[in-house]
Structure formats: C-alpha cells, structure tokens
Image (tube, rainbow, N blue to C red; front, side):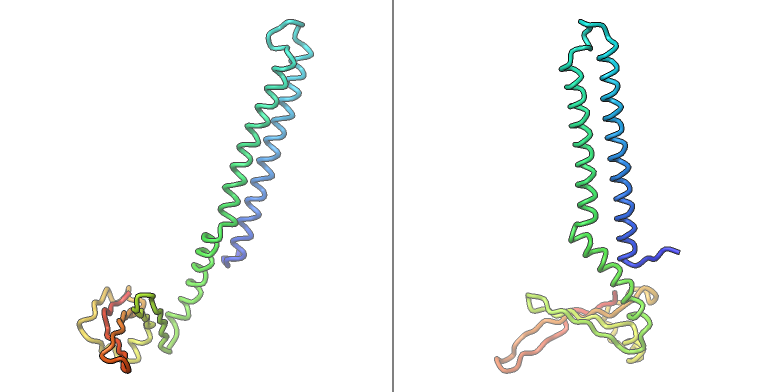
Length: 179
C-alpha cells in the first residue's frame, strides 16, 4: 500500500525523477559512445581522400551530437528542478494536503469552528463550520444566500468596520453566504 501523505508522494516523485534522469543520461552517453565508435570505424575503413574521411568531420559530428545531447539533458534537468524545487508549487501541494486533513476535522467536529481573516482594506472575513448550523438550529436570516443544502460546507460572513465616533468603532455585516 502506498501512502498518500505529502512527504511520501514527494519522495516517490523525486525517486521517479532521479530514475528518469539516470535513464536519460545513460541513453544519451551510450549513443555518444556508439557515435564515436561509428565515426572511428568509418574513418579507419574509408579510403584516403573519401569525402567522409576528414578528421575534422568526425570531430565535428561527435561535438555536435555531444552538445545536442547536453542541451536536451539540461532542458530535462531544468523541468525537473522546477517541478521538484518550485517553492510556490510545493507550498500549494502542502496546503492541499493540509486542507484535506483539516476538512475531516472541519466536517466532523461537533463544536463550532470560526476562522477569521482581517484584510488590509478593513474587511473581516469569517467562516463558520457546518456544526454552527446545528448549534443554532439553522434559524438564520432568510437574506443569506443559500446554495444547495448538501453542498454547503460553511457559512461565510464578511464585515466592514466603520466608526460612529472615534471611541466606538463598530462593524456591520457586508455579506453572508454559504460556501
């Protein structure tokens, strides 16, 4: 049985990429050796003065093949480096696993969970877990937009801070909806 944790999946990807790099390196350098011996065979067996016999042609063909192989190999290395070591992609994969793990707690908890985030523009977004609906008996205002009952995962409330006086800042609900 294979694990689906982030670290296990990342390890499997790295092993697969390492195998791919070793296989590609082996194929390219084996072809380079074959091309070298083919050039040597042609050079040794062609008569003097033949158009394919000049030493510069053999060296040029070997060099061109070597450079092309290294270009393709470097391109593969860069693609693998971006997929394995890309900080943004790695963070996204880690957050996806964290979301999957926390969603079990989020959906099965009998306690209400509230997550609030203050935005730079003064808005506050708060997300209430589905258990909140059971605690209040689902007696929420009808003005709240409700998606399908089975698709609702949380109640999202966005508030805006305003000041009636300098000493008494208040907030009002800007919008509330199910997500």
